[in-house]
Each structure stands twice: as structure tokens, then as C-alpha cells.
Image (cartoon, rainbow, N blue to C red; front, side):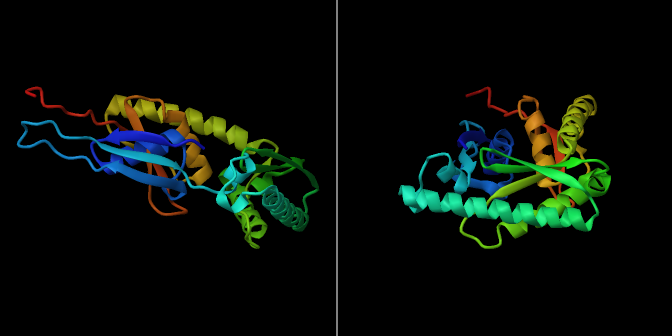
Length: 242
């Protein structure tokens, strides 16, 4: 994933702008502070904005996309990483099959890979028990599948579990919710705090509003009660006398 440079009145403001554009959480980011920023002297000189560079932490994606890191400098090392990755995916798939059997669900599993994410879509009838209220059971199963898949180390794969397109429908709902809440912020001039969401769902909201020039979003709280907050951007005040 590319890195971006952002400026702001403070380092934190610049970092949040970059996180929103990339659609990632802070713990997933590699952050470099290029300029701390400073206030103007007695209001006579214009202060400098803070400037940061933010990108996704280096992981298996770099090796998989052909940008070989130092640990995968040779073709032999790259093949080893691919073997480890495939083994991790198979561990996750086998665990998911076991979960479905214990839930009494007869279903198939479709697997596809997109960039650095592995999607496992469960197909079948009566999958409500797997999805649960607002996808909570599905999120729990996904969490366990990822733990099992990655428990042997070596590489780390990110697996997303879906059931008959539930997450796509949920994404559409969240994008619509994000736009409606954005209009509420504009009308009332006050911030809006959304319901607790998973990191995946928070990213959908951040991405839905990242191009809104007058608004910004950030996450607050601790898991599993972390929420997205939508607020108006504060205009950068400049000294007209300079």
C-alpha cells in the first residue's frame, strides 16, 4: 500500500487525516513525523503546519506483490513464504469447516484472494445462526479462524469470513448510514458518534467519508466498544496581517 503525506495544525490532526485517507487503523500504520509544527510568534509570524508520512506496516503483502523484502530476497525464500501462506489458509479453512459442522450447518466454502486479504464465503441455506445479531457471531468465528490460521507464525494472513454476501449488504448499509450521519453533522454542527463496530466496519465508514472536504472521522474507545466519530473539520486560521 502507498504512503501519504499530510499536514495539520498538530501532529495528531495530520496523522488522523492520513489514516482516514488510507482507511487503516493507527496500530496498522507506520508513522513518520516530518515536521512537528509550531505556533506563530506573538501573532506576527505565521506558524508552520505539522507534517507526517503514514503508510501500512510492512508485512507479507510486500513479498506477495513482488516487492521482495530483505527476508524474501531469493525465489526460494518467496516459495517458502507462499507455502507457509497456503498452509495457514488451509488451517483456517479446516477450522471453519469444523465450526460449521458443530453448528449443524451444511454449506460450502468459496475462497478467493484479493491483494493481501483471503475471503472465505460460506454458501448455503439458513445461515442466520452463523451470522448472528448484526454479524456478531460471524465476527467471532472470523476472529477464531484468524487465530488458528496464524498460530504457527512464519507469515500472517488476514482472513475475512462472509456468509451469502452478508458483509456486502452490511457495507452498503454502513455507507448509507455514514452519508446520513454526515448530513446530520452539517445540519446540527455537532459531532455524531456511531454504534460500536468491528475494525472492518469502521474502515468502511472512514472510507465512505474520506473525500468529504468539510468533515473528518476518527475512532475512539476500546475494543469491542470502539466507535467512529464524525465531526466538522476546523478551518486553519491564518493571520491576515502577515
